[in-house]
Image (cartoon, rainbow, N blue to C red):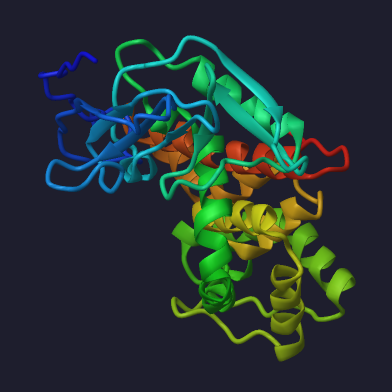
Length: 330
């Protein structure tokens, strides 16, 4: 068995080109680990310099191929956006999971796994094929997690949400009273009067839907610290979150984080907002300022592109993970 090393440190994504991810340069090592004399399994595991095979971030240990279960485990750095190594596979396919429940992504003959070495099992074939497409379009010089938002969301749904579900819901509800949709600009300033009128016009239909759907009229506010919503409305939204599955909650959490609004996230979850409508509401104030003072190249344009990726990928993930036919509106 031969061994080799990739000796050149991989550079991180330029933060001036895309602000979402920041990380330091990493060096990737590929080492060989002897397998069992009776086994011929081929698997890839990423590990840090001082850890045992399969326990860390930056070293890939290659083991002899066995007769059964071949897999590829992604490093923990996959979730932070670092370039994690050169493309080591040729073909990307999907197959039904071994237990017949869900679908797996295959890199050549290896089953794709999450950073904690759980099988990346998708609830629908459509989602598995979409994640497979992200892996198929990786370049030979490096695997770039920041170009695979669906893969990242799937790892979140499989690993983080099941063990931290109460905390995820708690964090979402803590910000509910300061929701973007409830916010109104002050009336007493020429600089903010136009914005307030725009907020009333654009947020109005969503506020009305919330009132009709849940039976409570939301409280709007101008205070920086937000207002206090009725307990019945708070409980209604909390119950929605509690009834979601792990994939749905991962998508709602991602949309709410990007939008600063659980109302917008739940609106998309219920099909009341398209992707473009959601982005318009999120950028209402900033787009008004851009219209007044102009767009800053390398700033506003990248913010818009980044927001579109975050909202669109979460909406597509939500649609593809549902077993009944559902596609997000654009």
